Amino acid sequence: MAHGVRAVHGDDALLSPVRRPKEASAGRSLRQVFGRDWLAAWLFLVPCLLVLVGLIGYPFVSAILLSFQAKLVGTPGVWVGLQNYQDLLFGRDLSAQFLQSVRVTVFFTLVADVLKFGLGMAMALLLHEQFKGRTFFRALFFLPWAIPSLIAGLTWKWIYDGTQIGLLNMLALRFGLSQDLIQWLGNYDLAIWSVVVAVVWASTPFWAMMFLAGLQAIPPELYEAAEIDGANVFGRFRHVTLPGLASVIIITTLLSTIWTATGINFIYVLTNGGPANATMTFPMLAYQIGVAGAGRLGVGATISLFFMPVFLVMIFFLTKRMLAERE
Amino acid sequence: MTLSRRTTRLIRRLVLVGGLGLFAIWTGLPLYWIVITSIKPNLLIYREPQLFPSQVTLDHFAFVLGQTPFLQYIRNSVSVTLVTTCLAMVIGTLAAYAIVRLSFAGRRWVARSVVVTYLVPGSLLFIPMFQVIYSIGLIDNIVGLMLTYLTFTVPFATWMMIAYFRNIPTELDDAALVDGCSRLQALMWIMVPIALPALAVVALFAFTLSWNEFLYALVFIGSDSQKTLTVGLIGLVRGDTFPWGPMMAASLLGALPPTLVYLVSQRWVVSGLAAGGVKG
Image (cartoon, each protein chain N blue to C red):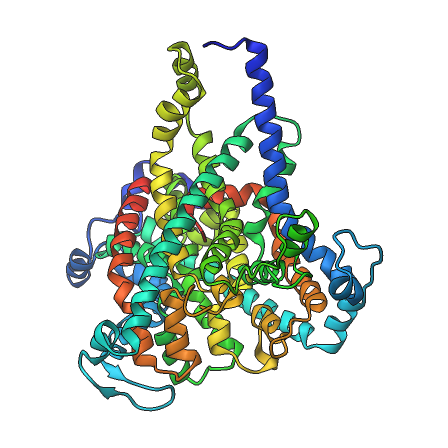
């Protein structure tokens, strides 16, 4: 930076290289079309756009193309039109599996969201209080956020172990809560709940952090005013806290819904979709059909695409909100 | 019914202590179980399971470090994480500066696509991504992971830097431009030093996300020499048997870096999440 010419700043600012009004005529027309700093801007953006277009945009388009092909890993694809879509909806083997994955995904995501909301809110409200050791508890409660989800998944698989050496079975036997060993992950009705608990353990901190930040932004005067008006704890929560957190709640719920529904790590480790597809969410099914088993890339891509519109709606809504908050 | 001040305070206290206790158990028990399993001798894991072990050993750590390619996995994780994080910081900073400070046609569009791509979950795109990586010959190669991890770190980095740059007064870099600085110099010498806290948040999240990533690594990587920590851990399972002692020892070691980073930079984690929303 040339310090010597700093005095120029001020009256002469209009004549600075960027804002000079007179341009060569070719330059002017380009600038009129593409904007004042178009050349510099696009140069700065090249690496970012390479990532966005090459590694996200292109795969997205190729997923759509793949969904119209029968293609195995390492072989050229064959165009089959809407066959993959038709198979998933009406096919003899696939449709039952696919519809099951839709049911499991919706149930899993809803239940997990509700629990994360409740626990996250409780955690945030507790940590919002003033007490000794608050920093310690906050650090401890948020710790699962930092732990790789795969490691959290493995840990829970170990806790759920179906023999007497698993932590939960050990505790259940010792405290006489159950006479038999419980198959937390092997029982058809129980498995999905076990997965939900593990997922909730790992992502409640995210909700709590978002809520806590939101709580801290609510002006304390509002609580005082409500208290003077005679509102009790629940009244204050209902009329001050909830409205104050509305925007945070919407954003957190949408973000978490997108990530929970499409997450695969916990299910992969805990149940691999079993028993008998009881925990087979759609990304898990896409993985099993598209990559793991026969490597039917076309069908796998179609499974993910089926859900894309739902997520795109949420994503566009979120984008609008997030950009609006920034501007 | 109105309660006396003393009673309300007592109830408040009870709820607080009870709530904190329950959450401490809920959060702490699995963590405790990782640590305890990693130092329990096999006898106390399999034969006479104990909640509080009467005997401890470092055998599992010795096994993991000596008899498995664990250190290789860690090295790979470190390389992938470092390269991805550094690239994301540079790319994100450049792009954010252009979006915030430069005027060009399509600016809003670019900003919007950054946010949209940031929100598109990677697990919806792993199959076509597999094809892309396959076609450029980077399957089973950590370079392929470095590239694909840019898909979530770059949009995030750009998004965070946009937020921070917006709050830096325009006068500062205008002055530099008047002094004859180029745009790049203004960014390097004026904006970046001011935005160091934001860059730290970006580094923190990019590191955590890359270190913890599993699905891409699972799908793209096959051989031990290229595995990162997360897929490597799965590889410790032999058939249907889970060697829990070594697995928990490896888990503990693998969870340590992000945990330490988190504990050191807690404040930034919360403010970063509030600003950008990362990982649910």
